[in-house]
Amino acid sequence: MASVVGLLEERELAARGRVEVLREEADRMLAELAGGDGVAGVADRAAARR
Image 1: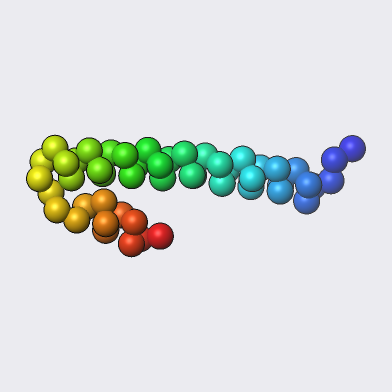
Image 2: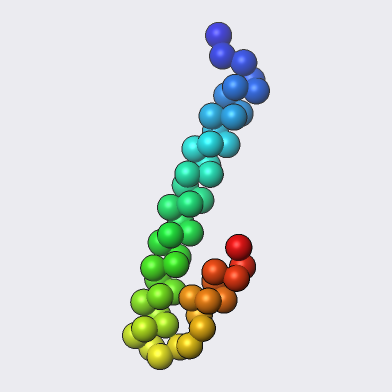
């Protein structure tokens, strides 16, 4: 039987993976907005949040 700590670690790892995918998607969207709308520095501000 798996331990509670082991199960929590697995869930944390999966959640971290989902967060990374969402960050990449947000970066792509911000870059698209910055390029399409002429908004300067939007992607830079997003990167600075990290």
